[in-house]
Length: 120
Image 1 (cartoon, rainbow, N blue to C red):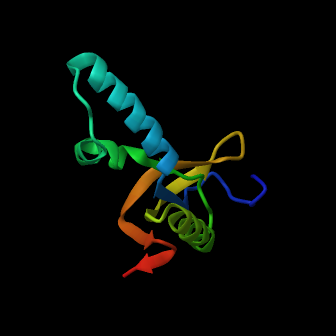
Image 2 (spheres, helix red, strand yellow):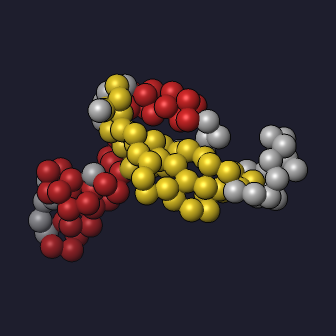
């Protein structure tokens, strides 16, 4: 048992994938430097975004045990970043450290937010 009185059975949990401007900027600067050193060419932000830089700049939040908590976080982070945040879900369990761990991803669940608003 843990603080939520949940047994060893899997539970449904939520997490948020969100665009992070800081991660994007750090990755872009590294890629730009590497491109100059390797090929003596300047990497543009547009090319970086088109070749995976945008997708690679998404972070994953902690796991939430309530959909409402995940929605609040997604709204906030999408508004702050002025970009996309996706609430995803799956089945998980509490590990020996009383932390949620994802076991299986739910491919049928995704709710998207942009600039703090849910996308229909």
